[in-house]
Length: 574
Ligand code: SRM
Ligand code: SF4
Image 1 (cartoon, rainbow, N blue to C red):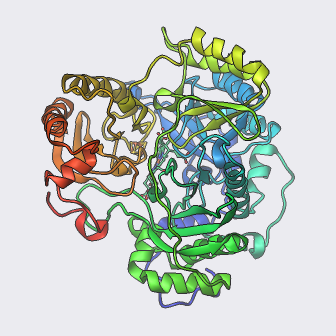
Image 2: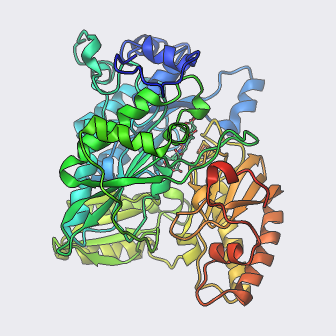
Image 3: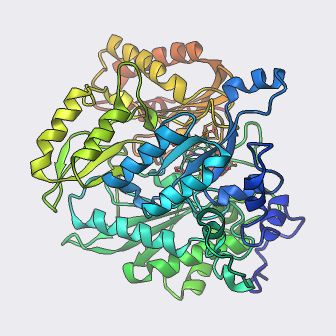
């Protein structure tokens, strides 16, 4: 471990096996290359099962057919999910065409899945096609390094279209930060791109160490008043502060967000990040680096359930954490500057950027790019990508912005949008709903999420219509297990999977994503949930203050108690 790491805040004790796996891996190589040659299994063996995650892949199997294959004494239908690194979510239309071709020709599911961290995943790549996948990415200047496991993940930033230079600047910053924190190992190039083996020394990972980080680490950059990245789901967030001429002067630094918990494990809780201080633009990289190295050194490597930054911050205290940032970055953190948020969602209409080009945000149901019998979304996007040379921007709400469209192409794109019915009206509640992937690919899924959201929202729409509230929205999110990938624990209504068909229901988050909702009902079915919500929405429609949101209402009239300090209050009864 790092030589400077002798602070009183280092957690002593037996390290988890993950630390051994990383330390023994020869900078993430393991024996992945040997597993690639084995044809007897479609999976990876031993430590490689975890090591491939550092390279941006997860081994999965189709859970819909798992028991059937078991009965037939067949290996589970192993295939990899690959997650691209795409800081800020921008992909050119030319890159999109290549990705789509690969998805159609070489993946089991033939879909592209936009994620809520502004990138895309390809599900169902068989082991023998993996190298081809990485080489295809490399040809189009992309990679999947460090999109999973104990490293800094895809850096996300406000994706609202280029109304000012600011969004372009934060996008550039997200790329710089991503690059700065990227593992330096050559393992990725050697294994996937057939680059010559380069023998490594202890200095190979000067920033991350050969043990990398204690756990995943997430960064967001936001431009108020839109909290479209959900800052509180991130270990570190930078809130952009502008002067009166719209120039960036610096960033408010927030640390310690993160949403995962474990059912019935009271030592785990979702957290709202804490304000640390204001950082001048010129100091931002050294401050970002300091936060990461503090977490590297002080994060708990003896217990993965306590390893994320919010637990480190909770144990160490904001005062010491801040002091250490200042010490390591040689910077004085100034008092937090004023900021406020008004919403989280995307804006679904044409917006002209300061670059005089057009941007149109498309609602993508669950972020899933596929063709169905009556909705040919995948074909539509392919046609759009072939129509102009520009960018697609993936938002942190799993949507897609057709971006940087020159005036002369706008009409063609409008025609394609119409032809495929992409702009058919979407209710406000649907626009503000989100589900994680869950079944059939996620190995951790306890209940359906992506596959149940559409119908669930349709039923909520009917409840809103019955109460003359159809023009209103509620932020609704469904997550297949308490890991919280759909960021349900920042929603006004949150369903968290417990077992097939059963969820815990949380209510009382707010529209801007700064409050954790409170447990309202435990272990309930979808129809029980709809029953409960129907009653609550009816009361809300009658008794709410002018324009009062659902989440604020249930807190104000005391249906649930507001959670102010999640670390101590998340588990207390409503
Ligand atoms: Fe997640 C694990 C999908 C955003 C918290 N997440 C997983 C895995 C890889 C399951 C696994 O470990 O085997 C899921 C893959 C399912 C599949 O088949 O695709 C998965 N997570 C997703 C995505 C695709 C959800 C989506 O529908 O968009 C998101 C991919 C983001 C990306 O591009 O990097 C995704 N995951 C999140 C978020 C939200 C966010 O980051 O804004 C969270 C909550 C915030 C946080 O980190 O606290 C999140 N995912 C987790 C966790 C819990 C981590 C923890 O702190 O304990 C796990 C499990 C783990 O890491 O052990 C997890
Ligand atoms: Fe899988 Fe759970 Fe994440 Fe949903 S929340 S994608 S079920 S890990």
